[in-house]
Image (cartoon, rainbow, N blue to C red; front, side, top):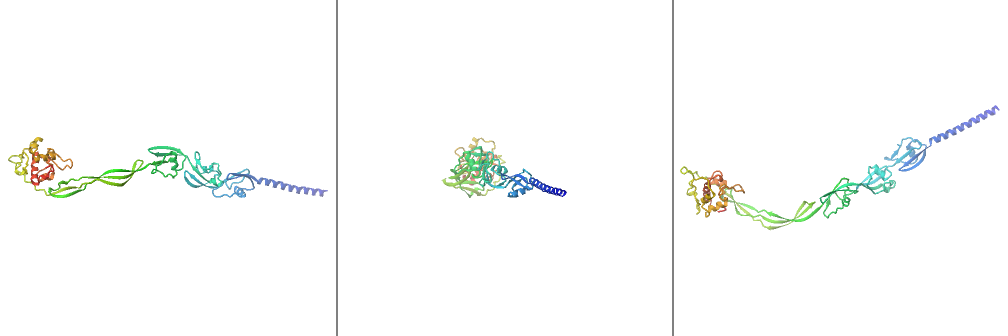
Length: 408
């Protein structure tokens, strides 16, 4: 009996060991098997795993992770029951933003997420695809975005700020309702992308013919003349400028001339050449000073009276008192005298007259300084007494003739 009892105890002990082992194994199985939520590109499934790390879970479920893919939590994270494992793979998208095309990459799963990932605000923008469209569909990976912007349009003297969603300058022009002429251009190419704050200027171009009258300068020829005192000039043949009409094609941009091309020309008046005589005659030595000790002035002897039948009136008697215009006229012999005619023409009987055109002719007879000195004058004729001027004029006439004065 003792033996039977002993055997029974051994049997019971053996069964106990087996039962304990079974219970312990079940507990271990339940503890190691974990349920997690695995989301790949927005698609979620529940999986059970004995894996210790996230990367083991991904491997067990055939999820390949490439460079650039986003894994949350990290691939080395320890797996816990109820964990959310999220994988967003990197995707290539063809983006055209405000007319500029580019190739981008994103881990977003929808168009909206891609825009957020790329830092593009979709508010108010025109987008070629729905924001909720999934990038898993290849046709949604190429989309266009035109953002809202304010563009300043300058046209016809006016500047206008326009709020619009436009990608190119052409769209801005169309939105602003501006018509372009055949020659008109825009400050930026019509197909060029446009950005917020840009300025688009319309350049009104116009080309028209204009006729202008231009002078044809006369040709001036100089000839040496030995009968004229050196340096003195005298017009032998009076010249005259001509005239021509020239037709130009004039191009303007916004009213400002930018181009001018000659198309034709026509002479309406021929120019007439002018001939000018240049004196080369050497000046004669000045005469010796006269001895006026007896009468206190120049005697104006017969050599100074001037021949040629028109000697004038009063001789130089040495009187240097001021003379009136009437006295000067009387000195010259009155209206019938050639001297009267010369002085009237040259200086209007003004003994201090100066030629305003060249400031080179002086006094009653409009002497040049060199000529005045050649006939014995000193200083400037305007500082000499009218009788002294008359005296020197008669000396000049005797030596060179009446041709010294155009008015003779």
